[in-house]
Length: 148
Image 1 (cartoon, rainbow, N blue to C red):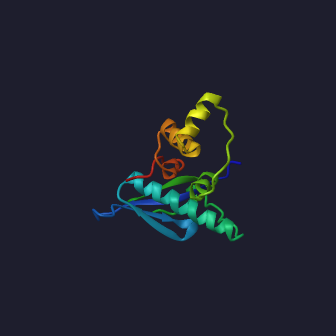
Image 2: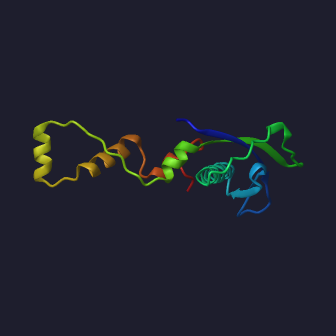
Image 3: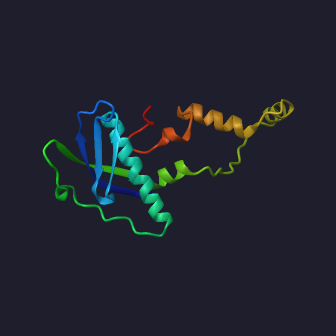
């Protein structure tokens, strides 16, 4: 399933050096902020994703997205759209594990058993290395890796 939502946001650059970007989320009657533009967009996506997942879990309807051209902006503000992949976000929040059956040569199995190697840990570590990540948070959708 590919459950994505798109909502408009309003970006505003401030004179505050600690919080140079404010993001207004009109369809959620909320705000967030960012220390740079990429972080502000990331924070908006996180706000939308978390709110939508919460609303779905509570059995409540998601707000109807306002068309971008109908979002009022003031001088110095900019409208844009944020895409949130709710399935990916929900998976990122989940601590569930899945069972995988793998096929390996018998000799390798015997050698690993003698060394008391944890097969699941080796597979997880190997997959993380192959994908190029160290944690699930790095798989956040659309904006990319979690800003530092």
